[in-house]
Image (tube, rainbow, N blue to C red; front, side):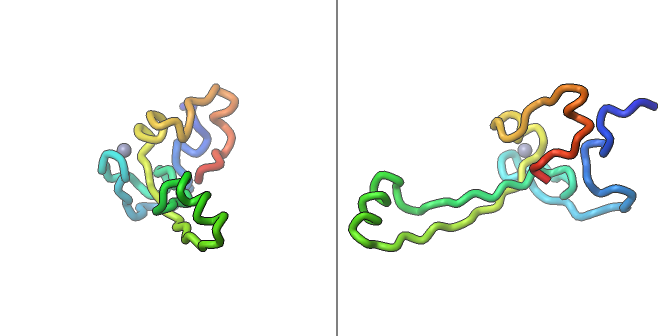
Amino acid sequence: MPKKRKSRGRHKGGKGKEYMVQCDECGALIPRSKAVKLTRPVSVVDPQLAKELRKQGAIIPRYRVTKYYCIRCAVHRGIIRIRSEEERKKVPSFW
Ligand SMILES: [Zn+2]
């Protein structure tokens, strides 16, 4: 049977079951290997204000927030894109 993707859209390989994660956008339960993991630095202070405070010598902490997205939400938010037939065969970078 022809496959759309070499990895069948996951990266668990021959492993059996694996733990589920919840999508941070819609709350859907998805397997860890199928989820899109995104780590972004988040500042608690407004960027314009943070720039000025840093100029005056203040140290503003930046936190790293890791979020999981289901494929639907990741496509909708523009984190991943629908890929062409050849592109689909490659291992994506977001795993
Ligand atoms: Zn979702």
